[in-house]
Length: 279
Image 1 (cartoon, helix red, strand yellow):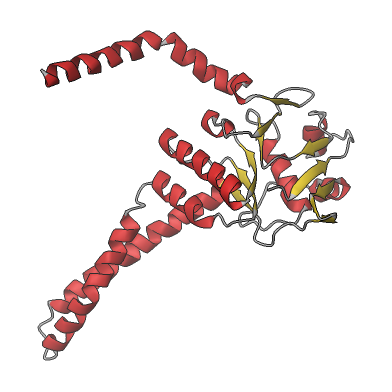
Image 2 (cartoon, helix red, strand yellow):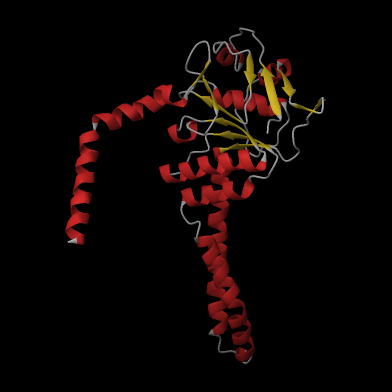
């Protein structure tokens, strides 16, 4: 599903942010797919472009973006087009939002606070059960009654104990059907395995639940999202590239090819061990 179809940037060269960054990309029109990715090295402007789009289409966001005196002026000069259905322009879904890596870290911090709160409740209940006051029996029964749900709640929170697991839990619970999401470097805190899980989750939300995603990333695993349109902001002019052509991806590829013998040697050890085990 496509809600946002095109975004037009002003071709105005001024030595102020964000004009100076985005003008140098020679990118005047962005045409969106169900998944559109802005790729580039640090300082390439991919997050700036995401922020401009979010501000122009009035998306919700939690954390404060980088800004300047001229940011709003730049945004005002931008225009956009939504997709049409039955010859009528679609509206950006109400629940659409921009999600930054800071939002994910905030959810992780909040989860830690919930964990401490749940642990403190367990300690208080244990003290209640062990009380020797005149109403000890009454407090003991109260404590035992509340202990089981309190332990279940703590165990549920503990399942998302690591930063990566908590971040993945955040994504699994926030995506709604038929919604537009802008994601700024969502791979932060995620292991390679969880980045693949996020990739598959995004693909599922696009093709089964009608979501649209616009993502700023340099993660090779997210760049390989099926049928994504990838804008390479490291090139001038900005061009659409295949994910496997990108410099950041090639760095990983060249590194693993250079060390291919080590991987093959390790694989041979595992095969040999399994054969001996089966004898």
